[in-house]
Length: 100
Image (cartoon, rainbow, N blue to C red):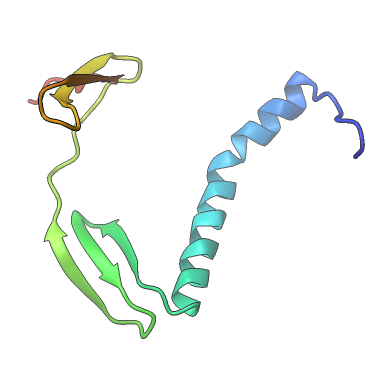
C-alpha cells in the first residue's frame, strides 16, 4: 500500500465543500441500483412515507409528522425505556427550537 499524503487546509476545505453533492450522487446511485436489482425502496417525500417498487409504481405508507425545528448547537436530552422496560436510557443530541 502507498503512503497517505497530507492535505493542506485549502484542499481539505475544497473537498469538504463537495461532500453534500457527493452524498447526493451516492444516494441516487444506490436508489437506482436497488430498484434495478428488484428491491423496493422506502423514502420520505413531501411529508409522506412512500414505498417505491421496481416496476415504477409506488404507494403511500403513511403521512409523516412535521419536522421538529432545531437551532444548530442547541442540546437535547431524550429519555426512553430500556430493552426490558425498567431501565432508562438517554440520548443526548440537539434540542428542538420552541414551536411558534
